Amino acid sequence: DLEIDQEDRLAMKGYCGSVAADRTGRVLAVSAPRGNRVVFWDLESGEYLEAWRLTDSCGIAAAAGPRTFTLTNGLGEFVVHDPEAGLDLARGDAGPAPWDNHLLAVTA
Image 1 (cartoon, rainbow, N blue to C red):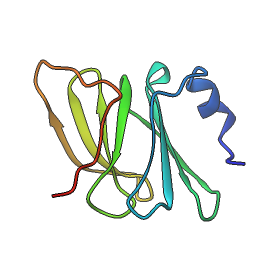
Image 2: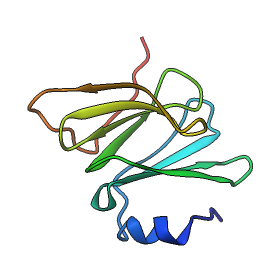
Image 3: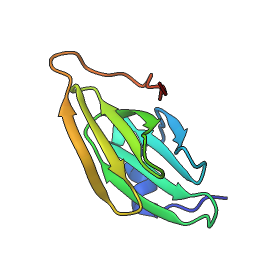
Image 4: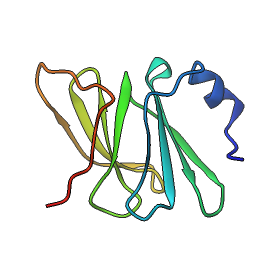
């Protein structure tokens, strides 16, 4: 069972938009757009890493680096996030087109 802080669980408002694991298969991310959250767990230890705030967050895909994710939202923003460090590694804007929850990592 994956534990979660009670406050963060309630903030998710009973809804998950997307689920993805990082490229190592060690870190799990779950988006909760109704609660403006993305929550992360370390699957090896079962440790709850963080609930990161991103308005209308929904799309999640493994980013190029280990234990990192690309996150998108309904405002057209995208972020590359490292949940273990609690840092945004990159941030951008897709313009007027909002993202939905369908995000897929593609390798060249």
